[in-house]
Image (cartoon, rainbow, N blue to C red):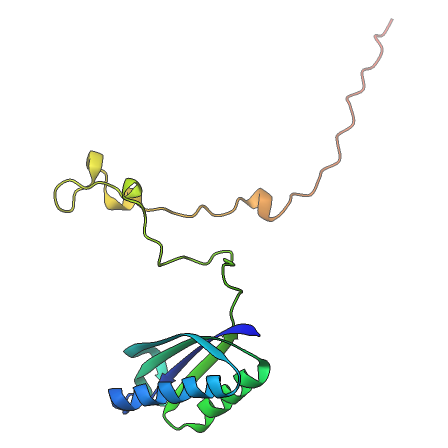
Length: 164
């Protein structure tokens, strides 16, 4: 069985209880089709980045589960059939413990030793502004991104023999 992540957005006209029962019914769809739900979360009502089916808000639900292809197809079919679901996405998740390049780990807290110490409110150590302390990614150099074509070596200057 493979791991999958699924997020769905439900209509804001639903009540909180209706959304919870909807999320529970989708969880049962996963379990009845041979899947195991590892995590099921309700992210609550949030504003959407853009309008979806004339809606500006929606209830967000999240599942992390193990299942097979038919499990995912049935879950997506149920998403499409339910009129309260305005958008959904199911993707294959990486195996547990595998970190994808560029993926940020938001749940890991920095040790106390790494945190910058602050003086009075809004002031950082040594009078530096907070902007100075931000970590910025350096863009790749142009040499590494696009190699320069090699120029042929110039011929050595010819030395003429002294005239006699």
